[in-house]
Image (cartoon, rainbow, N blue to C red; front, top):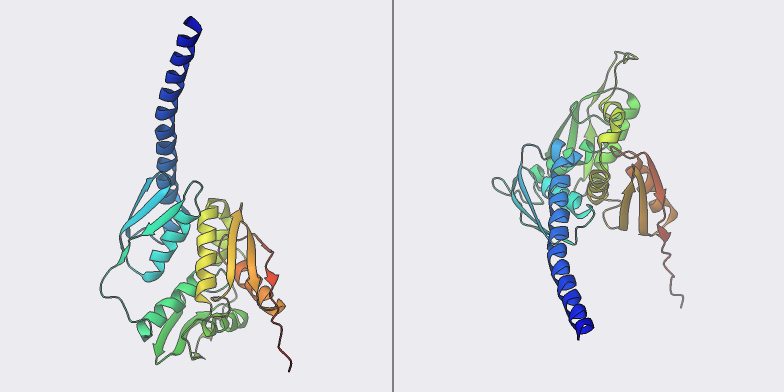
Length: 268
């Protein structure tokens, strides 16, 4: 009888401990998710002027509030989705003001600026972007002919851009050795760019580039090393993905594990 009672008491105690430990563990995980999101590079840099609220319950995250641009909405989602412990993300963020028509020049300018913003070897602050009926004009100053050409190359690959008129001037003043570009400055503090933010920047960049927007690509980041998975239609497309991702802020190295999905033609 005593043995039976002992077992019963033991079962009750274990049940009680389990029922109290699971919510505590879930609460700790949820708190960590919310804290990590707010401390991420993307939230502190790109979303710092937005009103984004992150609420997690058992790994299911709700994003509410307002952001200034459509790209910020997707950035917030990608960062949170990449955090450990997150099971799902319900993105309820709203864009301030009237949403621009996705076929409008205003929307296209925003996409172009966002695309340039994430690349380390071009200068967003020195590049002026205007558009009329899908024809994008670039003004401003480039540090070199290479940077000028690369800026135009990236802009041409933005979905919706019909053609690019590159009126940027090339600086005649040689950059001082002690002066660093924005990309070099960010690389110098690369350790502060968390993996979730790098993943978000990479995914958004691939989405905005026309040549890679249709890729079925998975992105994982570990200590700045980005691993790409999924499928590409050709070796050229696979190499292009590597090139684009390598130029994203915070990326130290790209391991491209994408497979080539060859199309077999039907011969009569």
